[in-house]
Amino acid sequence: MVLAHVAVHPGLTAQQIARALGIREPAIARALGRLADDGLLALAADSATYSLGGGHPDS
Image (cartoon, rainbow, N blue to C red; front, side):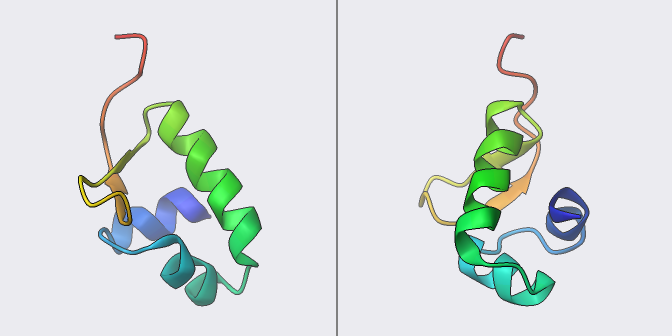
């Protein structure tokens, strides 16, 4: 659900994603962290917004 939302709405903050999905921000932050660690999401240079990509961290 989180990954799909970021795919459609890139450039949102964790707080914005949490509000849009109706999920508490700490849960969204954990999900975003896992997705970023897996290389599915990229954290922007401003360290506040997320988008798809980045590739797998082991590549």
